[in-house]
Length: 189
Length: 127
Image (cartoon, rainbow over all chains, first blue to last red; front, top):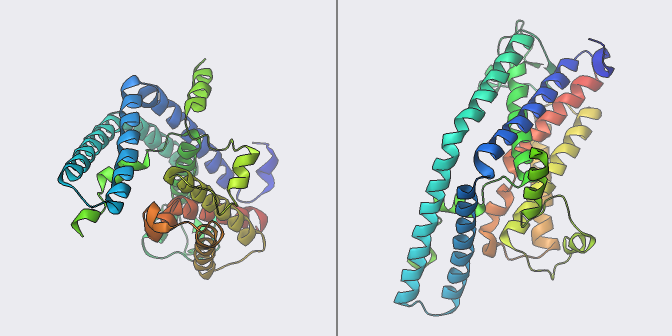
């Protein structure tokens, strides 16, 4: 294979990154088709955004003014609505996540067949524990700084997909995370 | 066809990442500006990513070898993020969920991006 970086000893690393990047784009395209372009997702997202912002406003106001019973009830109602929408959103994504997971699994299998037993990169540090198990997976030899495809693919999956989602605006709204793991309520302290 | 729709969808997004106008750039350095939670979170996220990529390239090019440099990267990027929102912007962190929430913004993605660029540049440039 004659391409510009073929002279480098570890050009396989670039191949892994390139394939991972294309995979990330394919996964986001699939997610867009199955999730993000649908009306139900847009409705869910906008209701989460509204409830989240409303909750922030109400909590800010409630800190300034004396807490009233009606205020507390309203806050509870908005919080409940937020949690329900967040749960619906999670369920919605979970249904379509299977397709994305399948794509990631297939690509991993492909990369595995291409680079099994190959050192695709050299680590600038000595890994240990779980990291070493991943970075040395399927490799011969005793050099702990040898890097296998699996570790590089893992790093690509996290960094590229996360940032791609963020860039395209597909990242989950922050209100959703607040709904899943409720912060300690100021009114109880 | 699909890409056209995708572009439209992007334009409909309230927060247009990567499309900052000059006035919005000025806001990045203005301690008087008011910040929405999402906006500040996005800014801190992308600063983290740029730091991860830049440090990875730098560490890999020199090269800096050893696990200690991973710790140094963590300390450096966290220090820069803290200096940015606490010293330069002077935001009240309690309004944004506290120090923990702000410092965690984009942290894991930044770590993986740093490791990826460090490993790749080191491997390609020095072997």
